[in-house]
Image 1: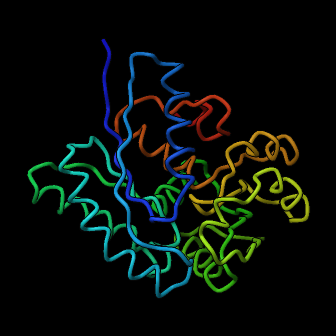
Image 2: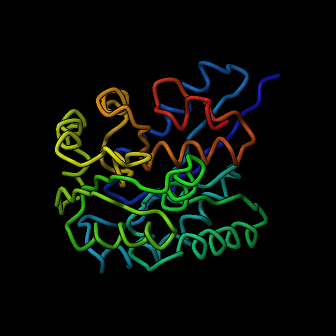
Image 3: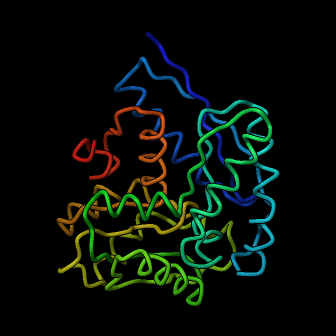
Amino acid sequence: MVRSFRIGQIVPSSNTTMETEVPAMLLAHQAQFPEHRFTFHSSRMRMKTVKKEELAAMDAESDRCALELSDARVDVLGYACLVAIMAMGPGYHRTSQQRLQLRTADNGATAPVITSAGALVDALKVMGAQRVALVAPYMRPLTELVVNYIREEGIEVSDWRALEIPDNLDVGRHDPFRLPDIVRGMNTRDVDAIVLSACVQMPSLAAVPMVEAITGKPVVTAAIATTYAILKQLQLRPVVPGAGALLSGAYA
């Protein structure tokens, strides 16, 4: 029996990656499980420059976006901006998820809400990762907020790189095939996993198998973690070929 699912995403207005990588993974899942069908629906929050003040203003628009997507009766709603959540302070993904789900309930269309920030934290715990290395496109102060957020969740970040790309469109233009060389310059020997992109806007999916092969470590990204969370929330098997260890079936 064919089952159809509507995937809602709240995305920054300048995001050009989340609506490509997540659908690509879910359609690859659909190719493995043709009885599962997906459609994709987005609502946007204004954001051009990745800085704390603009992120906070953008986050305030997420309530409107949740309401709009609940009008479409989506089956799951994903807040697709990791740094906007993590810049609001430790544990904020739980507050955001609860608040946005209430907005959908108030509209008579209760939908489970996940955030890319919460999905990444949860994915690392599912993988049993106690120590990670991390790559992020943000300026150094924002990257430090992300690193500290993850540490507050009980996961040590032993090495990290801030690529310091301030413009969000430029983040989306970053060549994913530069990531393997960036990781080669990091200390990954003692880590349990590598967060190849702690940002849903920085393309990374194509480089994941390469970095896993180079390092011998499981590799996850914010987009991969979000896809895993979506599939689990829909009670579907979290398997996507070519999308790294988390979606290999090992953590199904």
